[in-house]
Every structure is written in C-alpha cells, then in structure tokens.
Image 1 (tube, rainbow, N blue to C red):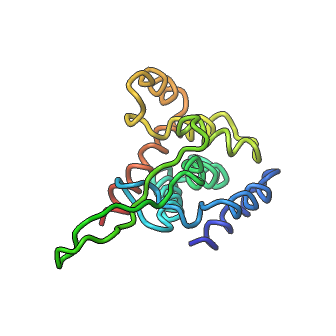
Image 2: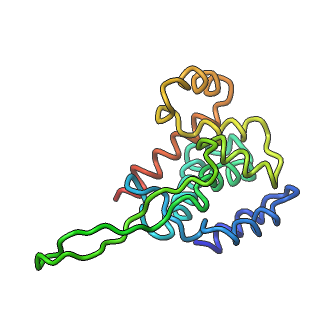
Length: 180
C-alpha cells in the first residue's frame, strides 16, 4: 500500500510533491491508525483509509476532475492525523480472569488546529492547492463538523461540488470499504 500511495503522489506534477513525500517518511503516516475506534483503528489504517478515499472519489466523480486533483484530495484529506495517535495501555481481564495490560490508541494533538483546516495547512507547506482542492479537504467532514460550522459547510458544498464528493468518498471508505 505504501508503494501504491507514493507512486500515486509522485504522478502529481506540482512543485513540492517530493518534499511532501520526504515529510511523510519522517512521520507515522504509513503506520498510524485512521481513528481510535470508529474505523481502521489498527496499524496502517490511515494509509489504507487514504487510499480507499481516493478510490471512492475516483469512482464517484467519473472523470469530472483531473487525476491529480483526486489524488491530492483523496490521499491527503486526513494528513492532519500524522503524529496524532499514541499507544497507551489499560487493564482488562483476559479469558482466564487474569488482569492483563491491553494496548489501545489514544490521541495526543501536538498541533490543535482543527481537522480539515490542519490538513490544508500541512499540505500548503509543500504544495499549492487549487481553491476547490482546498475547500474539498477543509470541509470533508461534512455533518461531522461542529454544528456551529454547518452554514460554512453548506456554502462550501454549494460552491465546490468536489467538497461534497470528498465527504461522500470518506463515508464510503469508512462505512462500506472498511466495514466489511
């Protein structure tokens, strides 16, 4: 999966892609979970989820946007999760009634800048995004945003259909591809 991810990113013809790939190598992107409990909450889950969102986005949009745009948006929408999850331990009883330490993922947000907005900020350090790509990544959480943001989500979705498709692709990846 890592090789597929890197090859897709390398196919994007924008300044900064190589620097972004170098940055990702220095993070836990390829080994991190995608969440603590909602989906792909296992080692490598973030990488798998990112590829799934790209594939769902490609399936949903049927050539309406360039491959370059779909690759950037699909693969990088959750880049905000690099170095975000940590392993901690809790006590639980095993099948024999003995207490054992069980590992689980927790969060440690070293850059509390939000979700979609943090992804946009990280990507923008390396690559110039189009407005539509920026809005698609920023608002990919849709109805999972805090309710105070709903009017912004609505305006973004009215103006940038790719943002709607990105939210749908994220849902498809999470609840259809990864929930089998």
